[in-house]
Each structure stands twice: as structure tokens, then as C-alpha cells.
Length: 199
Image (tube, rainbow, N blue to C red; front, side, top):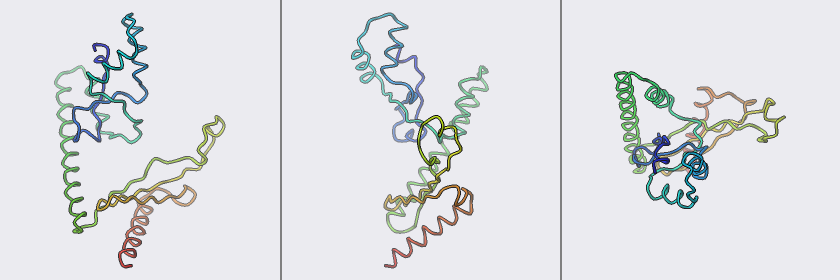
């Protein structure tokens, strides 16, 4: 238990509201890796099954998914909290992080309210964003990995009224990822939704 406690798990930025006690270790780590580290550090021949059972029964820890779109402000404040040696600075950074998380919670509360309005047909509420770029073709051979690849852009529109998701895709040879493209895709989405509702 001391060995498992020596790892530094983090709270999820996205599920902190629903499950604030749940902690996550880096996605590159596994219980098997931790058990090997334990054997190397403590020189106790504890079977993997025993280590696994203690991890599962005594700790509310999971392993995170790879993070590619994290909150820059959270990352910066967490780094400042973890690296500063001045207690006054650390308290200041902790207060800033708490304020930031409170603002995020206010936003999600407002989003839930508007989602309810959308489900009652009182408003149209959309959430939209570009997903991670995908290379074409998606191969991991060394030559292609280091070559210039064509990027596929994916723009997602989520209708909060019925949880429908519409994906619009195009490659970088067609257009960029600017405000004009976003406005055009939203206009197209709303026009097609309007045409569907008429029929």
C-alpha cells in the first residue's frame, strides 16, 4: 500500500464534477509495471495477484486515457503548484486553480440548464469543435511517419437536445481551419437541420 501511495495520481479534468474522489495514473503505466517496480524496490516476493487485488480493493485509482487536448491553464497551474518551493506562491497558485475550476463548474452548470431547455424544444443548443487531425494515409512505417502527410480535418457538431453528433470532414487541400470554415460548416448544419424539420 505504501508503494501504490507513492505514485502521484491526478484528478480528471472532465469527470471531476461527477466523481471528485476518482484519481488517475498516467496512461503509459500499468499495474504490471507497478508490480515490477515494487519487486525491484522492496525486495519482497509478493505475487502479482496480491498486488493487483490490493490496488483494486484499497484504492480508487484508474489509468488515464492519452491526453492530447488538455486544459492549458490547468496544466500550467498544476506545474507551478508542483514545482514552486515558496509556500505563499503555492497557496496563490492553488487559489487560482480553485477559481479556475469553479468557473469551469459554473460553465457546465449553465450548459446542463441549456441542455434541459433544448430537450424541451425551447432552444437549439449546439456544442462544436475540431477533433484531432488525422494523417492520410495512417500508416506507422518509418518512411511515411517522417514524410509530409496530408491532414484530414474533422469538425463535430453535437446537438444537445437529442445527443446527435454530425461530423463534417475535409482535407487540408480543400480548406483551412479558420473562422470562415467554422461559420460555413455551422451554416450548412443549421440549413440542413431546418430543411429536415420542414419535411
